[in-house]
Amino acid sequence: MAIDVYLSEEKIKERVIELANKINKDYAGKEIVVVGVLNGAFMFCADLIRHINVPVTLDFIAASSYGEETESSGQVKIEWDLKNEIKGKHILLVEDIVDTGLTIKSLKALLGSREPASIKLASLLFKPARNIHPVEIDYLAFEIDDKFVIGYGLDYAGRYRELPYIGIYSE
Ligand code: 5GP
Image (cartoon, rainbow, N blue to C red; front, side, top):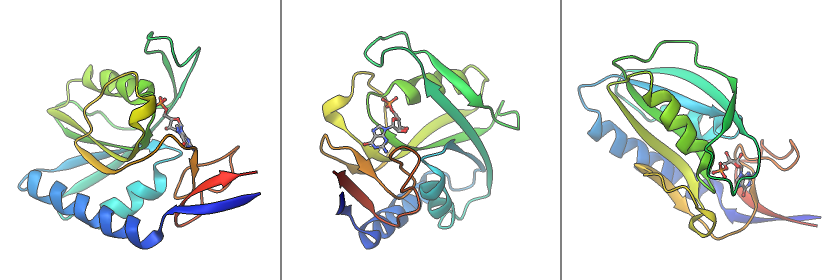
């Protein structure tokens, strides 16, 4: 098996800083609750908040989709919920990848029902070729080809999350 580097550590670092700068401008004078979507977004989330200079609190949520991903039921199962209330807060949801869009669409709807002041989405990756649930990505690091990627938080059967770059796995 081989892993080809698709997005290098340097390229990711650069882009994460650009996104953080934009977030800092947009949220100037406000406080944000960063909600990392486990497990895949842990590394992106950790790197992103290092460059955020408005007041931040951090929380996590984990979800898994059930049923066929082509079903438009929007059903996701919450495996781990937020620890804190978000009513009246500015939420920045941080996701690893928007693929079909099912997970993030459902999470946005769920968090939206808890009456936050606002919800925005930051995603490391977006695969337009597979997207069937359109969702607005306010801060997107990279749009990618229709390839299965690993590393920088993303796994293949639980492995390779620790890689500092994003790679393409081939047998
Ligand atoms: P969606 O609900 O948008 O179809 O799927 C989102 C989830 O599927 C992501 O959070 C991620 O866990 C997984 N996923 C989608 N595409 C990839 C990929 O190319 N590589 C990896 N490792 N996971 C992916």
